Image (tube, rainbow, N blue to C red; front, side, top):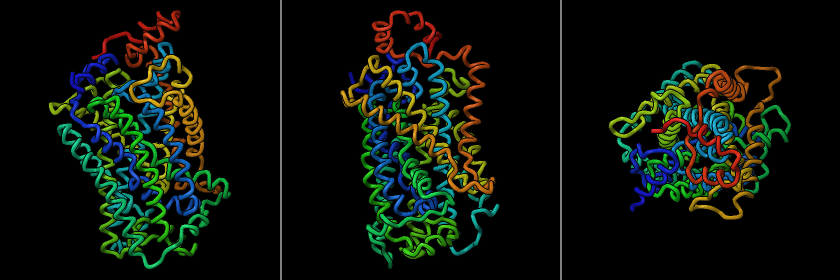
Length: 523
């Protein structure tokens, strides 16, 4: 039996037929995951936020702390994906790990948190690439501040064009998507290294590493302790989205090994690589705090990272590097549309959203789900029309939504550890310990990323952190949907045969719940 046949057989045990084309290699899955957990896509657009919220010291010190704790989340998700390699990802895992009785409600909320997280992350990636293209294209040509409606309008138009292009690329044959994600690995890492090495080598001025570690800059109007706490956003936003390995898993060969390796390898590469990239770029920022703040709040190009590149490397080569970075971010958007659409496809397959989106085109791609993802991601960007903190809100929404959706299956992996059948990839007895650390960390992140990022006194809508409001709207809507309708018919995804056997053996009183949890057919 080939690996493809084994993958299809395991998928059938999990309750689903092989519908998607299993033509993505494990390396291509890793490429898609690496593109999404993209250092340029996350750190470069948030460079202004980082420099004004703790400055170089906070950015560099928080990176390894958040990175190591993110690896704990990644290891836990890796164990779970090896046990349950399905495109439904975290919401399917939650259903199985919560058990038959809680499966419907737990999977429902997990799915919606993951849904909004995917939307926030995808929208942030496309919006960031639009900002970079604008900044590179108008440097020293047109003077429009980021609050100007012309700037906002152009960036939103470019954002929609990038999303539409990403959607078109996601409706071609899956094997071509695999080629794109493989190429993105070299483009992503190569672009990062080229940017950092060029900036360090060509900059006329430098700050020593010891100076970086003591270079504090708090422009939030809040206390230094508070500022240090919220400075984790840059690293947190970078280290999320690695559940994308799961959303492509039904198209990946050797899924129960390739999936977890994609997640852990992505984090293992990005934590040290990102640290040295940040260190290099921070050595070339202005050493004088007044000059630094002038660049932060009035960049010549509308983008702080573009100013850093141009000041270090000169206009022509600096813009070239910015274009390389922007293309890397577009790769991130393409991969995010792929994973967001697969999540919608799986959610539709189980009845949580309209079955209209449980559809494959002749090319074996979930084309309707792809275009729904584009519409949703465009809507999520609309607050940028009136709030200068919109990108920060997008990153917070994406990060919190995904982190919460990660924590639910990990929590039940610990709480129901005796019912968890580990897959071929696991860390043995360390699994529950690592998972407990991961759940605690997600709780901290969820609180921190929903609090104000600047002094809210006096209140100004343009400076308000809209992330908790948008998350609250989604959560309120999902709750109303559940109590008014979904709880009457949503049974959750079909449970894994092996998981059902574990509950049958250890909780015999719950046998009658199996029929409820698995009512209906799943095509």
